[in-house]
Image 1 (cartoon, chains in turn purple, red):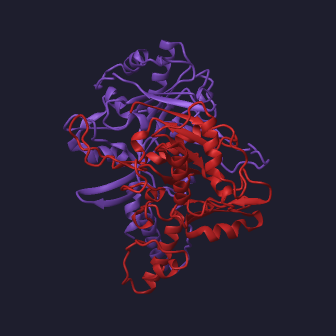
Image 2 (spheres, rainbow over the protein chains, first blue to last red):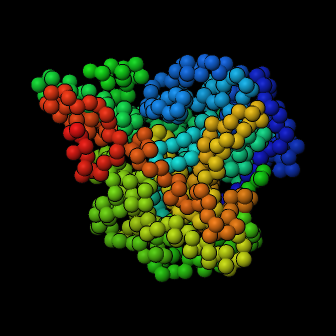
Image 3 (cartoon, rainbow over the protein chains, first blue to last red):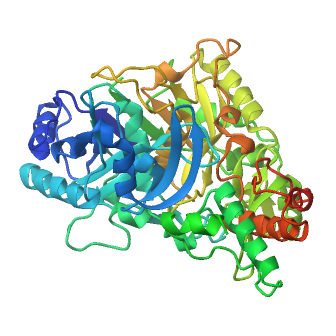
Length: 286
Length: 286
């Protein structure tokens, strides 16, 4: 495997609720000079999946919509005109504003993430496999910020028909050393690569990756250790950055004061559990 | 720009200190059927740059080497056989073990990151531009973990000759909405994409990306708003996750106890600055 190519599909129209996305993507792929082959991977901007699934809500409800999509407040920071909330989404993803998006939507509406992106990817994958008689994979991508680094990258929020993590544990290098890397997040790397050709606001929401067939599953039912985007989400309890720095400090401060009032009998044991947004307020104001 | 291709260069030998990397990469590119054209981007695994630059140290010094490369401890966690340290590297990068690597190195040695990856990328870029008479870009990549998501991805730790961030601020979409995305971290997306064809432990440490010439600078001296990998590093003071959750909580706890002892006159204002491990104690006791 020494090369890959990525092509943005042309001719996918603006998507509205109820549209048959598999048909639209299939038609665009059929019309492309590349066609569709075993091992091809479709990377689909999740926004058009949200649109087809009718995930629009009115923009007036934006803050309420974010709250509804949120299971846990991770961090927040005021900005001119409001508060940025980094939250854990009901899908497990940690992201700003719960992925609620007001770009590329008709005026007065905002878009939620798909209800179940792995299920949407699976439906698309099955339909495209049936149409083309080819073993293909599907990734739904979204654009996320990240700690420590400027700019956003596209990552996989839904996946079907391919391995999302390539496990190197136990693999030896040319010198016989076991590799320190545990697993390459290949579905995220594919989503980011596809973003380079899809771009933003270009009217090209789908890209076809060719040359990574070793990642694609022959049998969708067979599954594997990591074959949905859900497998790319680290559980909060295993995450060293499950709370923002200010939020963790504030909770510690409150606990420290309570401990002092308690005669110092309680100890620093840290916020090992991931409390809900509701319980965080009480933790802060003791 | 509707497509790109990525090819791993063949025939790059094991690299030893003092090797002329520009010559090795240039020879491999000359021998490839693709050749080299204006707009091509070379993605080079930083490990071979470290090797050419003689950044090996003996493995016995691993913990000391990590400490020397570190400017700030961000988080730490015990694991079987030691402690994982997430640190801010002297280059600004936040990463595990300060990027000190013991895979793909001869037995008994470990590798530090290049002394100045942006400068290394620039030297490579100038040499390759001179050899081929083509406007090319160079990215040095390394494999990093990230919060919230499983697996690692390759990112750009050095860059020359190309824009590393593609700024969308102020761009309107098809509906006239200004895009919420501020900037795409295209150099990171390119590094991740190249990892898909380079792989690990494959003896193919360099990939050539074709089809992203809009990112490549005509004039290396002209510069731009974000043309080195340093521009991809978010300053700690702007980062909502500049400390691990447990570390921030512990500091808050100590500050809360001190505040109680102080009669409650101090307030929760959080660790707004990014204290060094040494100064953290004083920061706690406002």
